[in-house]
Image 1 (cartoon, one colour):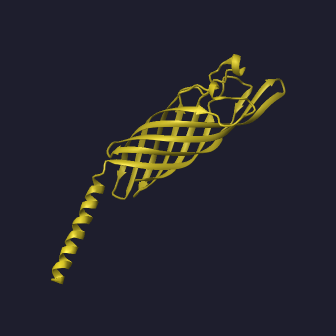
Image 2 (cartoon, rainbow, N blue to C red):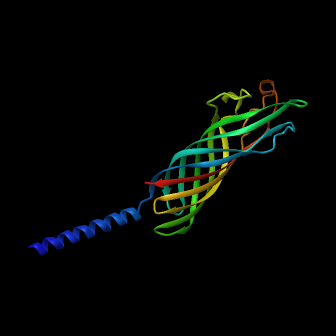
Image 3 (cartoon, helix red, strand yellow):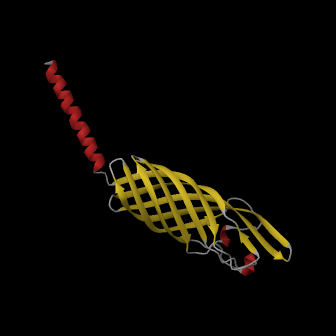
Length: 206
């Protein structure tokens, strides 16, 4: 009788493990969280007496992923970076300071795995994002959210690896929308620049 019970337990455990592994391999929908750092810089302004330096910041987000070959991903992320801005408003007279830009973005991407193994995957992806830029704190230029062109539209591309459920991604985005409205009556100058971002993120899939 004991041997029969042992056999039944082994069979049940074997069926359970097989079912779980098949369910996992057949999974098509995932939820993930990620966070990391990014470098932001601007294209050259239209004016010679302004400098917008690169800034380093951080990002946090979560995403939904569907499919395997290809896969579709929608992400919701918050990004923050401080950029040093300098403007010569009179010959030899400058105003400068760090401007803390905050962004909320929704990238929509399509990806395809170059390497697809049970424990390791390497993919490339591309798509577009829409978002908004705003300020949480004061700055020397008195920039406000109303000075920004919102919504911001960008193109995005990147690559990443996945080891089991751990992920490491890097992506580049170019904002098609100029950051500032270019309202000379309000800002006193038409900046005429586009934001670019390289983001490095680590995360986990559920």
